[in-house]
Amino acid sequence: MDRLGTTSGATRRTFIAGAAAAGSAAALTAGASAASAAPRAPRPSVAVLGGGVAGLTAAHELAERGLPVTVYERRALGGKARSMDVPDSGRGGRRHLPAEHGFRFIPGIYHNLPDTMRRIPFPGNRNGVWDNLVAPPEMSFARTGREDLRIPLPWPGHRPADLTLDEIRRALIAFLDTVTHIPPHETAYFAGRGLVFLTSCDERRNEAWERTPWWEFIRAERMSYDYQRILAVGLTRNIVATKAEEASTRTVATLLEAFVFNALGRGADGPLDRVLNAPTNEAWIDPWVAHLRSLGVEFRVGWTLRELAYGDGRITGAVLEDPSGARRTVTADHYVSALPVEHARRTWGPALRAADPQLARCDALQTDWMTGIQFYLTERAPLLHGHLNCIDSPWSLTAIQQAEHWPHRDFPRDYGDGSAVDCLSVDVSEWDRPGILYGKTAKQCTREQVAREVWAQLKAALNDTGRTVLKDGALHSWFLDPGVDGLGTPEPTNDDELLIHPVGTFHNRPSAATAVPNLHLSGDFVSVDIDLATMEGANASARAAVNALLDRIGSPAERCTIKPLFRAPELEHLKRHDRSRYRLGLRNLFDLG
Image 1 (spheres, rainbow, N blue to C red):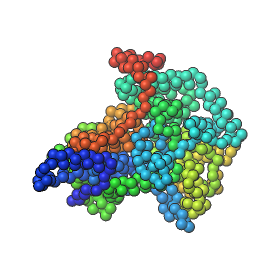
Image 2 (image 1 turned 120 degrees about the vertical axis):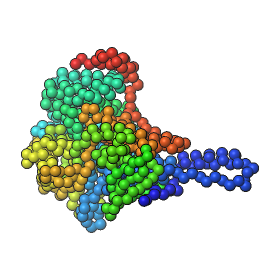
Image 3 (image 1 turned 180 degrees about the horizontal axis):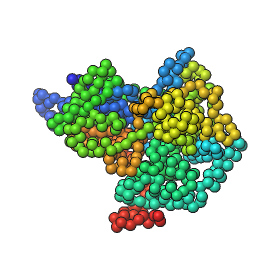
Image 4 (image 1 turned 90 degrees about the vertical axis):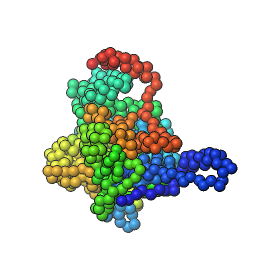
């Protein structure tokens, strides 16, 4: 059996706490110097099972409080958030082409993750890794057969994107086209539904709106095509990989509410849209791991958790496969399970599930496919300066050109063979709908067919109004997430599925603290204020898990701060009024049906 060892890492908090304890002990034993000192109790050891954002956050918070931590990760540190190399793509001393599971998006509604990023040192940055965030000045709804709708993202200090006269003309056409295709009464109705949710009390949100699909809440079935594609599908399938017909209104509207306040500068950490200024591992994950090592955290990569052994009311060990494939039982005083839910629940045996019913409820949580593919280009495509959402594409594509957001990188000089000048990173959110090229779903296509189909759908959205934005001759190569396997066979698999949010999901999400005293849960499926599968949710849940652990051991260490989503104080009295109406069985005051 492996036993986690203690480390010598200490923080300012633990140093002060230790100094205070030492001072008290000295005062109590004054005049008794001949007495032998009592041995110091060992600090509880912690095994963090999973090295994604949740696991690294838990390790960070625990290490800062002086606890010895070992992180076990089956594949690569950073999990789904990491970037990776395209194998054998680097030439002439350049790095391999950068790839990823999906592009990183860190909006201003996040608070807990940015706090962690500020505490990760980075050379030359006053605010650590957080200073590696940059804000695109615009986004776009890319329409098929129509002008794309470009939307500026204003923020103090933002410089508007430079537009040519032709781009300005096209932007005006797209705006007027959208206005005329969504009738004024539909726009007014959607605004009214927003007002209903804004003034709904927590009970109505958690119960009535959690049971109501977004499609039904906004009456999408009665509305125009543009209303459905932009306000229903565009806010669900393309962003959180959940079907509008199934997605919980509570989840979708809470996210929309947060973004609206973010755009207004209310309760925001920063601009609405932020991305990293370099590949994720270079800008964030590698510096994070280095910092955690400096705090004494140990990492074991290539170790796969198979089971959490349970007995006598506690976790007695973690059964893992080491890199050689041999099974080994690792023991620690406490365990933080930081795996994605689809992997974590496989490690909970019947006895453990019986010990805490919330574990069994996790079987009702659902996941779906949302996977990235990167296209490397030999010419910069004249798209836009930010994210684009191809809302008419059958496979619900979202994308961003990355090189312009990496100001300290010269793409052809630094990556690949020198001929690729940009990376167009695309997320595919819909894998069960036929495409336009082969008439097959993405799961039915081979990897090569997926790449061709995504490229065709991008061109259909972007090369459709007299401009050739994407050129076949400029396509250098592509890279599809290696977590997807068996495409084109009867049983395709995806090692990195995304938690989705159909109605009722909220009530099946577990808390970070479990009924088992030395087991704590961390991950984007754990119940936290941001009810969405996000890096922010993973980070907040890790903080909650660490707080639960500290409570269990009676630690005097400062608890982790967990900042909730912004709540507008001027709406609280309306929510209190709505609570009275809800308990009386009445509609929200603004709900006119």
